[in-house]
Length: 279
Image (cartoon, rainbow, N blue to C red; front, side, top):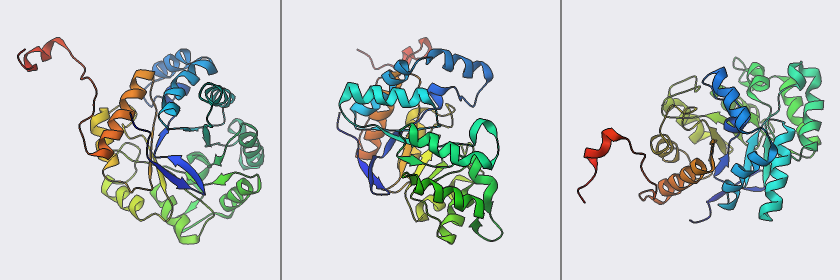
């Protein structure tokens, strides 16, 4: 399998397929029971590392995740296993769910965990988007300034498409945006054709997230839609619960970009036996 195509964000080379973290940190967007199952399945950094390693060995050496020490330890382990760097795209909120006064602590924590990128999470970004004046609130601009001061690359993680248009309009110091985008419209806030337009016209590369709508779409369906409607500079972030799934989504993604049939086995059930070609 070929190494994955790359783009550039803030002067840093990134793979166009990024490893997401919801499916090893326990954010299923499904149920508390599913969250618990995920957390029990990935209860050590070594188990996280095993999954991330699959992405890294295919050239997808970047992970998007909150400020979790277990993630930082897992990435360092993958670097030891592969001999290549793994880029940490950190999306911190405020410390321990507290208020804006803890932002500097959150950024310092991200830096100490080895993050290259530091994007305020949606819970920090979206309340501070001024849609009336088409700009970002001064507090959010200060947040971005401090990220740069701490030696990391700033951007915005958002669920609000207006965050992109407002940041572009006011010339905010951002190098990329994190934005949900999938054919189901899950967490997209407006219709997918509008989200597509915003991504296509953004002044900086966009890191799309939730391409499979948190498991609501099949990989061939969800990935074909996203890869065929974003720009060459944009990225897709995807999480998986197993190394097998990681191998599949990497191959399906490459097939979408290379305009060929993906070399993956179809799942089979008893009801599909009559669909098989005669031997």
